[in-house]
Image (cartoon, rainbow, N blue to C red; front, side, top):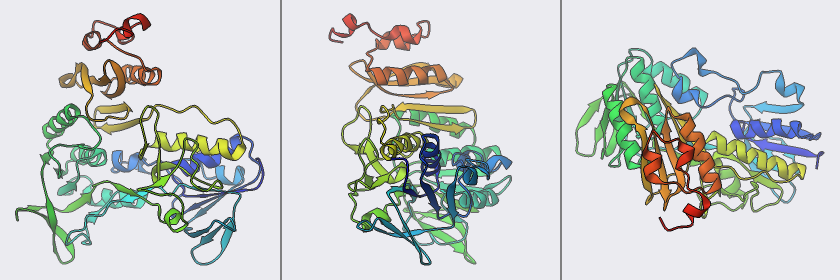
Length: 414
């Protein structure tokens, strides 16, 4: 199908990518992108990685792209309801749009911390450009003491930038280690040591009971044991929840996100969903998962584009993620799950290493830092289902590709 109207709800990476891909693929119908934000679509990684820089505001496309490509970009516009029977989207303030295909790219929003004082000035989340601007004001150069609630990748990226700017930083993590849900024990240990050496105070098993304010502004974080940590600002980074309210209200299949198949299709053939709002199939893993990453969103944009255009579905990709923490350029191939064996290649003390995860020698994931060749090799190993010799892989005198067993060797029990 190359005519009709596609309505995309959400102006983030996934939604903006889909609009461009449709035109690139020859779609000649109407394309409308609805974005609740007033800023045009922008790059999200700088929100946590460059919030103190002039490079914070990086637009995904130049302003002229949208009209030149006949894409109706409507900023500050919120969709309020979906009428699936009439193929119509209702808009805030009145008005509606009919669609031939509707694409939900509504993303996710910061998970709130339901404790006293969470509404004080100086307590913020981080998901949008406006959040990042506020973070820059609160935690820029010499801004006193920033407390970060949550030791995930976003929190650690913010900690690295704030420390580089001379801000005192404390990271409070409820679990027994940093990155408990998404990284291996070994990587958690390496990064905890790295941030401690940079001057960040890392506190695990920290139960936040509330925030203490003065004249409406946060002045301390109160812990479960009654102790308080004085601060000038607080970043709450305890995860994100899918913004799936529209889908739920419309009766689409949802369970902690909009449920989609390998082509981004929902339970309604006229409604697709892409990006952080979805739970999706992942190459090599059973069931559906939420992958909060730009590569996942752009992969799903390609899937949705193939559905609209009626072309062959793209091949599934190995999921990957990245995180910049000062001089550590971290890239993860695959999804880290419990119960795998881990091979260390390289030296964490030298700041260049890879942690290869495998089951019986078959590589399932890799966590790398400043090791792009290992990252690329791991993606190939995962896609091919390659089996490696752990001892050879750990030996830096052996080329990484030479650690892969031949088909005859791989057929023998490890």
